[in-house]
Image (cartoon, rainbow, N blue to C red; front, side, top):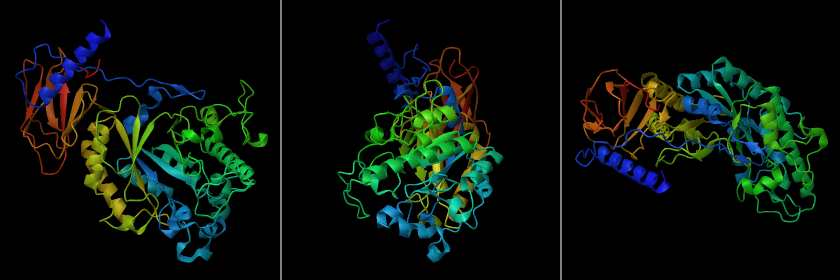
Length: 502
């Protein structure tokens, strides 16, 4: 069958679905197209590195909900994770935050208990965690061995990352780490060639010495990355950040500098010292950033912000999720509970923190589009997550105890959502219908199912109460008699006699 005919059939099928969802049964033909498989993500190769196959990303979709953690020296100041750059604080002055001399801005970490964080994540219904191991300020929350590194082992005699990964595993959570590429402690970040210093708040000017300084920054990044890859057991996810140079351009634009693919280029102007290189045993070539990841963490999945294409994509921020199901790639939505990622007093203020209702809605909008939600918390300088954020997370967890069957292990579809009104997810032989706040009707008609697919039952997911149903000759299932509280989400399970996708 040629492509034109296939396209026409798809158009006809989509038209039927739209009409069915508008409850207009008059123009749906008896042979209406039923459930059609959604497009499948196609694995691609870039810079010598192949994306992980779908099977290695399934855990992320099935987990659905994770905890992001931004915590570091900036938590003591309480002005967000970009405080050092925003204020133009020199590296020498900034490092004082790691010591008692900084007074009530001291990052003392005295109440940090990784098990408390992991237990809260688990109680909130989260299935994985991702912690900032080093942000752009250059402070590493682990035992970094590079000669110029600045880390928690030096300042607190503690390896916070070790404590974190152990707590994740003890609580049955997948382990994610955040690692920046850039480092504001190096002036060369703004002047990698030593001939053109970009605008910055630190007062750095063009200096030929900056080229070597930038090389050292890159070298430290390689050294610390290898330590994270080799000393903490299995890492399930890496969230790269800061791939762009001088905070300009894109991550991919800076790929020539970071060499984020499989191998290092022997002609690169910013060479990693052979002492810190990692060699591919098969070819004898020194490995680039993703080459090391695939060597030491072959199952790990990464985002695109190193300059390499990425195993999954990101949608960052609190803006609403709209549009169709994400099919070409797996997408993770990253959102913080207040307006910034690192701690500020706003994280203690209930009027400035997202509500549990807001989290539920974001989680549902992710689910019906086959996405994942990574929700950020911001512990204070002592290592405590605020009561305000804790209360929101625990309330979310209680909701997930009732509705989790529709969230975990499901896939967006089999039909497209309608923004603000409804969407679907499915697994095995069950379709889950999510009715959102803008849906005001008291009945709902699903698009046609396939020949041979028969309704078994439908019920409210939270209460398990069965609702009234009928299946007409057009293979449509009509739901009625369900509760529709004001400004809340209704989740209905529709069980069929056969699998949704064969």
